[in-house]
Length: 195
Image (cartoon, rainbow, N blue to C red):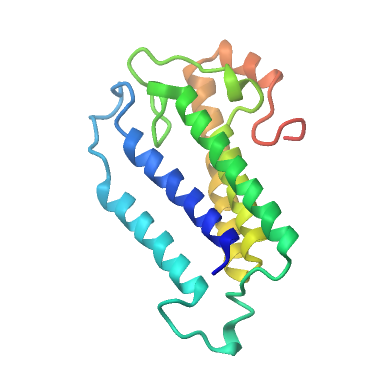
């Protein structure tokens, strides 16, 4: 059993559990009726992480040598350790960002009652630090697992993040027409000092 894979899996589970616990801790929406916590989705996410963990470690299924290249274990230990550090940093950034948003958070762009533009804490560095944290976690998984599966997960994460950011940027500009453009001038979207 690789301790590096255990750390990465625990970080992803911590991410999902934190979101599950804090799902309803947000202001009521002006646009949509309150939604119930999607326990089904959270349960599926936790089970999926657990099954991937079991499958990647080969504990519950026999893995033939012909597909080991696809589901390989870490072979370069320093890269795996770097991946763990990046994953831990990523989950930390995402959780701090979610905590900073507090009751202004929502799973989809939404106007809350008493909505405020948050520009402090990690939001003073990047406009989408939750996505920054998720990207760090995904890159960390690639370094940690060193497999095609982790590259596929990274590609999916990139598509989701790069699709959502422009939509959220438009929504925030419409919601805060004076504040948001000024905020955009002195912060990057996703990667500090880069983009």
